Amino acid sequence: MTKRALLSVSDKSGLVEFAKGLIANDFEIISSGGTLKTLLENNLRAADVGDLTGFGELFGGRVKTLHPIIHGGILFRRDNDRDRAQAAQNKIAPIDLVCANLYPFKRTAERGGDFEEIIENIDIGGPAMIRAAAKNFKSVIVVTDIGDYEAVIKAVAENKDDYDFRADLMIKAYEHTAAYDTFIAKYMNSFFGKTPRRAAIDGSLVAQLRYGENPHQKGFLYQFDDFYSRGFKALQGEASFNNITDISAAVKIARAFDQKAICIVKHGNPCGFSLRENLCEAWDEALKCDSLSAFGGVAAINGEVDRDLAEKISQMFIEVIAAPSFTRRALELFAAKKRLKLFKVGEGDRLPDLRDKTDFKHILGGFVMQESDEVKLSEIDEAKCVTKITPNREQNADLRVAWVIAALTKSNCVAYVKDRTLAAIGMGMTSRVDATLAAFRKAESTNINLNGCVMASEAFFPFRDSIDVANSFGVGAIAQPGGSVRDQEVIDAADERQIAMLFTGIRHFLH
Figure 1: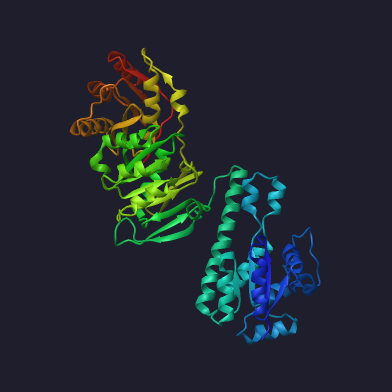
Figure 2: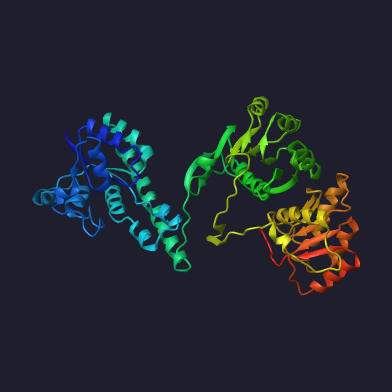
């Protein structure tokens, strides 16, 4: 029996082959606008929606499919006697498949088009058809994903387009329109400077992970846009929930510098970092901070991993390596390390510099949302020296490294850096003095000499005690935001100890 398919797509990818597959399975095609034009140009028979409704396109294409002949054909219930009678009385024929993807509102908005052009890229007919078909999914197949074309053709050819198959497409259709409306709402709030009354988080599923933070929890990876499906590739092993979060933390720090760098993270916190032109040297230096914690850690490499670096890394157990590039010989060597996981992140020879516009955190019964924080190297370059002594060139270079690491590590945090290498770090403490002392004790236990290093704190020092402790370690320069009521007391302590101190004026709490 002949069935009817309504095709109305903005993205024409795969359209012709999909239509051919439908025709081969006894579907008549209904279409309009650019979709109809594409089908006819490829010698595919298709009826014009306007010929069925008796109306051509109205208002510059704003109204094409919004008509009872179309929506009645989609929505009437095939198992309802009254619906069937009304359809027959009004000469409404059934539409058995709806394929639609929507006007490219997001792409138009992101390229910064004229507002009126952006408005015209808000699809009306498409979402209406999709929602109608999804509502009547028991009788109508709804297709919104180009990636489903082949599966749909196979299902109808083999008569396997059953309830479960259609239900899956129905859910995907509602997710599709929900994401579309979410982006429009976000854009309009931003354009008119409004605070969203309803905040929606739109992410697409990339993969189900083996489990969550613990084996009894289910875990899933979602992405904004297409970063993980496009710019994140597993070369060896399968990423866990904890791997993903640690990779994110390590990449943020390693990529903060547009130079070759290595950052090692354990349980979300950096335990090693070094900035060097030679990555083998950077690896050796990064391990000096806390090689015990680095065991089983996650390493982000801002540069290509070659055979020489692979040999060095292979001398200890590292669970994950994330880098933009691996040489063939490095991959061959790593292949023997069965517990090692390798992930290609980004393109070229640098990790991607990604910045999400918003940041959110789940809390009991809801979530808090904020603009994403951005840590800039220029914050040190533009900082105010508040002491009699100013940092020298080497200290200034080290302060840039320490400032970024401190800002991207759990508060309260202090980071000690020497020769562009993390020497010690205290993080996640309830007291800044405790963070200062924890870093020193760790350095002391591994025989790291902090004399001559610099220190950065992501928030101000409320008392002079941290300065006195830092002096006892041999700290030569400090960077902090300033802003305490006791700033002068802290400055006086630094002058007493002949320590250079910069105030950035910017706090970077991370909770």
